[in-house]
Image 1: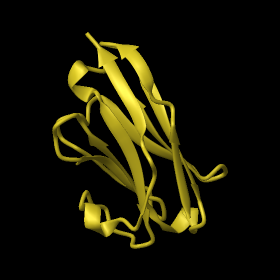
Image 2: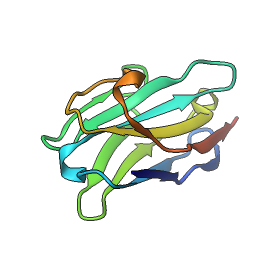
Image 3: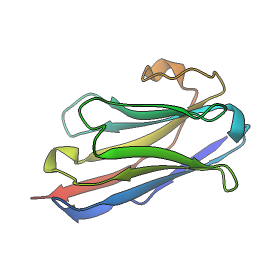
Length: 123
């Protein structure tokens, strides 16, 4: 199983980025995928999650008006579209996957993890 994140980078406050997570080795249309992030000196937190079999999603209340999760089943990619970025969004963003079809931000519920992509928002 491989999860490979991309799309991170340096952006000015108020800007946008789209992160991608390419997934291989598990049945993409029958799994749950989540985005987590870890800011410097802070614990990792759940950002947004998707159950691909039914399209259900959940996004953290603190960012749900700015971040949107989606998937492309033809390419086995999950996206995180981020807009109106703020300096406090600076973090390493990870995608994680499980074949358990539960919508969750519980880290222990995810069996597979990517290495992360750095997002830096400059004020």
